[in-house]
Image 1: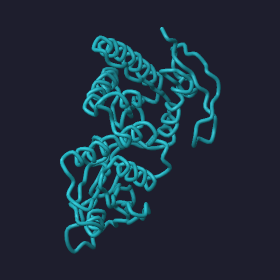
Image 2: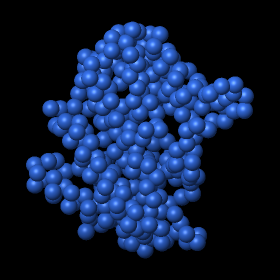
Image 3: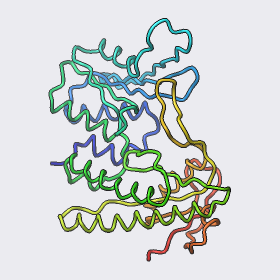
Image 4: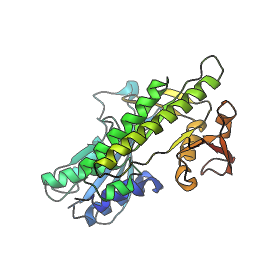
Length: 314
């Protein structure tokens, strides 16, 4: 059994979609092509804004059009309970067709964005399962080769094993995993006492441990006749804001700032440069570990070019 074309697209190409509106339209159109009887869909996302609690994009299958609705904070002026997240989308969908609204959380976090769908009739159990899988994979842009030759349950099991190796290494060397993002991990190693070298060296040791753990995991998978799993890591040093961020009724513990953006773009160079580990010049200047220079590279969305290094294969 293979993933549907919708799920294969989600784990392969969805990361390049320019916005939430296009993501919703693409997913909906592909689900229809896969045989799902959809009349419309809605994608709801909480936003960190003092007045706007959430944004909802509404997709109509017949025309392919997407419109946006805003949910506002009630603050101290509420005269009744606030509308639950996704309520705007559910109401709109309920008036669009005769079926029953089906809603799922996007990704693995139950408090994350939500995807809702409706059809001309209630969805069958297999159709509802397909919609749940689409929501589960909406945040996972890689694992393409794995997804093309394995059922969804095998892909999910592989992701769990991958996360165990990465998170275990991060925690072992004093780091903190802030969140799992699709098939990626955002982790930090706080600088203590204003001297970054200790945090940088700890992050390098964690990456070495994670890479060693992946070698053992891949060997076990080969013995079972399974494919090895992809591994790519990027390290950068910089200031960031981290903590609970979001709306009044929906908070998410995360990190934001230019350093987070840079390291995310740097990780995207792992495949083009064919390197499992990439290190920024800023990070490299603060560690005593010998690194291999790879030149200066432009990063998408980052104003200045970045000096890039990698670790010796041994």
